[in-house]
Image (cartoon, rainbow, N blue to C red; front, side):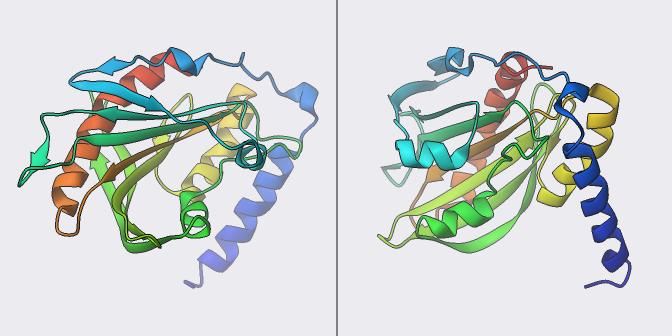
Length: 220
């Protein structure tokens, strides 16, 4: 670890602990949004299925609102094999103060669900509402499925890729806005080995049209 990080990280932890454990009365959380109004048709993508989340998993998530949907774009294929399936998962948390739950990082959840990361990094995604950063994972399941995963944290003020970065911005935003709500947004594109680049472009295009809609639905 870099020498400076040994001093910065404890300071971030201390400040975050002080902020998120302020009395609940100091916070003014927004009303819970109805994110199920996310449209069934976005661009050339049509809703294929809405997945139910197991109650045990739902309890572990601790989110105040969430959904998991699979969309299909039949025009997208490589060598006759469709890459036009995208799963959109959104989990929204009304508050992170007073010991309330926080988003579970896919870096932890994916391996726990039997996925192995083959590649990891970050990409920038241009959207009509501005460019956003996103984590990019190429993963393989223990059943041999292959996918590209893009995800980011979406707050009222910004979209963030890094877990540490999202924790850092929690501090000034809580002080300034008296709220700590956030959302984890994840896009999964299934693809065969060798299709990672095309799957990444497909996922980024899907995220590009999804992000502005989520900005309108989620509290700002």
